[in-house]
Amino acid sequence: MTTTASATSNALPLLLERVEVVSVDRLSPSFVRVELGSPALAEFGVEGPLLDQRIKLIFPGTDGLPDVAGIDEAAMAAWYARPAEERGHMRTYTVRDVRGTGADTRLVVDIVLHIGHGPVGPGAAWAEQVAVGDGVVVMAPRRGMPYGGIEFVPGAADRLLLAGDETAVPAIASILSALPADARGAAFLEVPLTADVQTLRHPEGVRVTWLPRDGAERGVAVMQAVLDHLGAPLELPPIDAVDDVDPDLWETPTYSSSGEDIDEAVSVVGHDLDGLYAWIAGESKVVTGLRRALVKDLEVDRRQVAFMGYWRLGVAMKS
Image 1 (cartoon, rainbow, N blue to C red):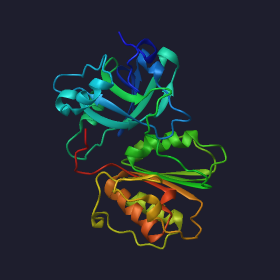
Image 2: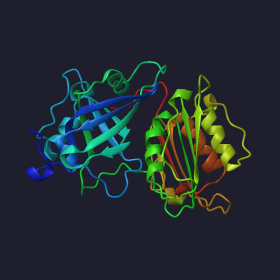
Image 3: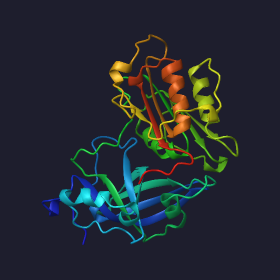
């Protein structure tokens, strides 16, 4: 029987629960939407809108789906440290939507299949064959407890720039749906195929542009679109020429995976990009190229940007 925080005194400060697939929808060639349900999700919650809220899904390992019933804080570290083959492979996703309330709460997650990118990872492999009734373990925020996992923090910015590849589409879509009606800016979404283009809810003042590759080189369209939007007189570097890529690239107004102090690294430059807030995510090499263009070449204040390497082509993600 599934228990909730109100029924146990040693509940984790987050949700770690087995949930069940209650619906599956193949949105397009590259996207599968799964709806996850469990009475335990009555405890799911965040303060404010979801925005780009991240959660983790744990897929079956060699021993099947891990048994997480009754794990408390004392036992979680040992469970987390187990080899992925035993514990289950863990991958990070955005909550695309939340449906229902109480015991009928459902988490909606859109999973990218990464067609034609080489070996299929555990998340895409699971999504390819997932069926109603299948189980998966979710790690997610518990209402009233700190969790993190939201990086979209525009502050007082008066215009927005959202950009990413297919892995960032769920997060950008969720952010767009939560923006105030008077928000202004642009969103650029690069996807594998024209058939992957979706209809998204967004403020009238935010222009949404889809960039299907349809066989073209990854990253070129979204990088060029961002530079053109900013009016940057920069020559687009070849993607393969982007070197010194941090596969764990993660930089926000308050954190840098490089260990740099964001405040000390800021150069104050007055220009027409001062009111901009940029949120950019996707393949690490492409994100690195855009980071250099904005921070180094255009001298955008690093407190105005969030750059996230969601994945790296040819490099297995950490579990």
